[in-house]
Length: 485
Ligand SMILES: *Cc1c(COP(=O)(O)O)cnc(C)c1O
Image (tube, rainbow, N blue to C red):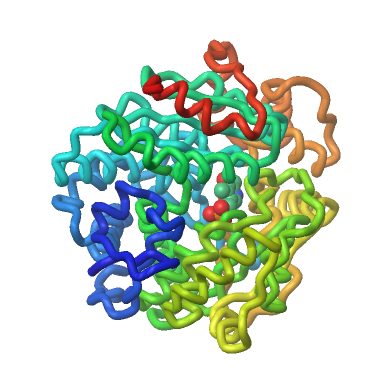
């Protein structure tokens, strides 16, 4: 099974796709035949989560040897629970807790796995060059990637985050990161500026680094090695709902996903293509509702105000992984996808044809909620169910509440409320005075919910990184760090 670029006929196997991250033509590697792979989804539902991961990753990334040991190295002992991503019944919904990993965000699921895949790919291809992982983050990816790649031999990692665009706790998590191969830098701009700079570094430095001892790769969800591990929890949630009697095998389940870069929800679509009985995938956005408009009208228009919200990991106007859906929805028409992406780049918008749109609408719905509704969702969920949710989860919760559903609904919970204590306290009507640690403690007093250990131990850690650069300095910053001018 080959991966193909979404923008040309360029093909490569899964090992090389993981190593490269982004395709050389600027496209994303997508699996052109995902619904035809042999995969026994019913057998998959009989397994525990880590065995599920082995089976799913073997199917999606078939060129990797010994997936079983890679999965075990990635996850064993790193999450709060053996099944990695528990499901909790909360009111009318099942909440899928994706935040029980080492940095308390859902990105841990994929970023625990990706470094294992990258090192295995290096070994399998006999690669001599050191890989530098470049990552733009809206807050959570950065920390999860740093933690995943810290001190992994043969790799380095550089993380760019938007200056004052992440929560205080998130910033502390990153700037105190330990490890000898890590580097963190603030950028005076928003997430899209960081992402644009990183993409620019990839394209501009490709030639420069060709014969150097360095090569670049990505930990952003544009890497197929990020996407594949996320497919697993869609199956795991479904399995758990059979076990608790909510559904019978074959019944349809809707998944409501708080969305930014479209990676999490796209993994749900991959699960559906692999046979999982998914009803609707509900794309939930915050005030930056570019995807809501796109899925409802077929027109993607990023020329709109950018809002800084309480769910910063979703403050995104260019959702990179949508390109993979467009590739599938257009009937694998890489020429068409190239045109849409060029139009997005040059004019800030594109519009898909009727056929593509109706393909998308068969599986996806979209909704959004504003700041007030987000706070109300946190408040209501706590008051009615005594269950504390973070502002990202609250966006999905609110969107789920605004629609009618005949299927059971899973709401994906993507972060611990303790990553965003200020917003959560405000929503609960409590004082938001004090620094990040005061706020965590107050939230703990108010709710009685335990603070994750990785967050409670942040206080007193030394800040190792405090650089801040202009948004057009990303490429030169990377070159300097590589030290090969
Ligand atoms: C990254 C992130 C999201 C959005 O996920 P995408 O894959 O970018 O759509 C939502 N919530 C949290 C907490 C995140 O860290």
